[in-house]
Image (cartoon, rainbow, N blue to C red):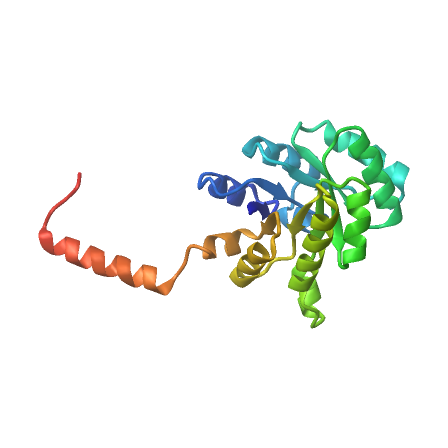
Length: 217
């Protein structure tokens, strides 16, 4: 499963890219607001930090306006992936952009039927929102499983990009359910490496090493 980092904080992206764990980046208007920076400037800097796709979201609601915004975003860098909402207008824009050879991330997916439409429109990625479904006492992981079954049934090439991930368990469950990609907040990615037994084991090794009085360098 590929890992995208879900942030507009370039410091976090830079740090995580150095680990070799990151395959791409997703942003959205809310994350840009948190950064407090110019939208195009942030996207350009992120694109320089990773070779993977960088999702930049349009804000228009009508297809033609989405395509106009997409044209501007595509000028920023070759690895920009246009992010459109899962609406009829968004699907029109998705079809037009993918026909032109551009990558498109269709976002705000909450049902298997929506995911089916996105795949038929040629989406590169479909972004089902796990955490927001969990907030409504709906099992977001069932949605991932349903989409995986439908896509496999018909050989759709659209990748399932699990979004709105909030916990380490979400990451594990998405991998088990067959998501192609998970877009994850920086803190959750870093937390995947943590385990109390790892920490205790390291403490014991270092305590024993100190008794030897040796140094490797």
